[in-house]
Length: 559
Image (cartoon, rainbow, N blue to C red; front, side, top):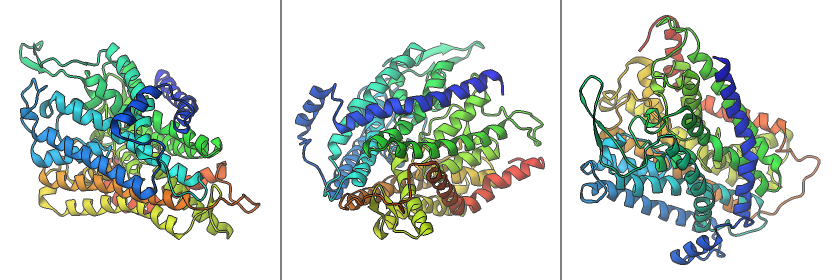
């Protein structure tokens, strides 16, 4: 690892810490009503949409509006794919998408997963990419931000029956946060050479005299929101390893930085909205420390001698334009952030590196995680940690002055265990189904890792993949699609139920026996709970996959 690479990694983390309170404070002002610089447009949207912004919803009403909106988005995106051969803005004359693949893709983008079993430039028209995928990149991210806002209100309000208005949260998240940042990033990407046009595909001749078709399209606008919204769906099939998506070191750094920017800043927003910035910093510190530790293991593994190949550095599958360190940092950030974009091939990572990437997803995508989704997922672990701490000190557990009771613990455990159950049960089914096993490129433990990665990515709403597994089959399109629905709404609905339950409770003043949740001790305990739950749930499966592969690689065997 060169001095320049060390400096870049340092700059990455310093900028992340520095930007967290800046963007987080701005978002807190937006959601508290202090910042309305786009007020006329916001009011026009409410009038046009028939929304009464001053009318709030109970948790069931909020959940109904959220589900109805996302179901409508699913249907629209499904129809766009099935009818794209009849619709305009299809210069490559691409045919309609096969129904099961269309179902999987529509599910993927509605759930903020952006799992891709297709090649973007060879499967989807410009209209489908812009009106379907890019729109869902915005609103699926805004949906996650709305849920964390609803949960925050539930934790802070006293004896209330409402947790906010879904439509207001959706509009403000899109209008004030996602759109301005995306426009800014898209302009920078375009200036660096990322394509943004509606041209027909270009015919070119290679240096050896062979013809080549160069895809075009409105890529920069989708890439900006795919990174900022922790979506990850690539405009081109090779994603951010494609020079049209990621042409320069500057675009590589900015796209990689955008992965964690909003999820990190939301922790500070949370602290401001609950009245204590220290609460947000405690959660941020837990996320950052686990992330840095995991990234360290990944980097060490990639830079270590490989006994099977004799290479001192693992270059297979890396983006050689930017180096091994950038590939590993991107791989860590994308699996931690529930993003799914890649600038290298995850399947070519060393076993331990791939194992950490899988574990980041298996932990529930709470190490920063998706926009909004990472924070409300981590708050489920916060509730569980407070409960455990209460047992240790012999007191009724309290968080922000409110008692954590059986209902909240059951709902929190449901959000943690449901994605895990989907990952393990679906992976087990794939491991004994001939049609699923036929999709593997590799046998042995690496083949198992391919399957585990696919369902961890689906249930964790991540979207990245071990590229060696062919998932464009009926089995994987259906089962990964189901995992995505469970991983998204199987977490959102219990989280909203907790928001409604907590909102109705009274706030008790802190006492000498109250366990503080804004200090280093709580941060360490929270980290321990997150890692312990992940280890207890997934260690056997990880042992049979990446850990066994690592041990066999040390003896010179590869798969």
